[in-house]
Length: 116
Image 1 (cartoon, rainbow, N blue to C red):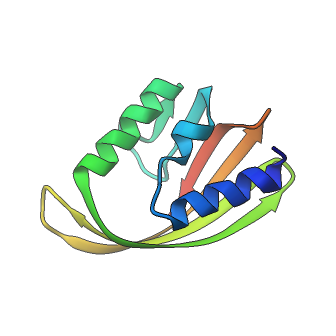
Image 2: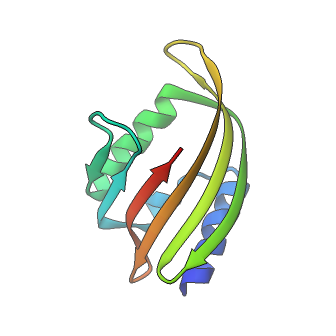
């Protein structure tokens, strides 16, 4: 698949409610970088990033999402999401707006970087 096909597939998956694009596309050496401090700010390796993803979905209830994009430039894909979520621990309901920037090499995500 070329970069545009991967981008279209990633967006189609999320629009269909499947946010496990990483499990399909993460490289074994993927690096995930959040726009925050703390233990989840930078996570390296597919198993660790899968753990981070499982933590996030376990800690939040997602009521709705909207997907925008993809936006492609060279070997990078940007996707924007807005989400209506509840933080399970506090019960706080909030609106989330974020952009994910994925760097692709050999058909796999080698880095994902989140902006919010």
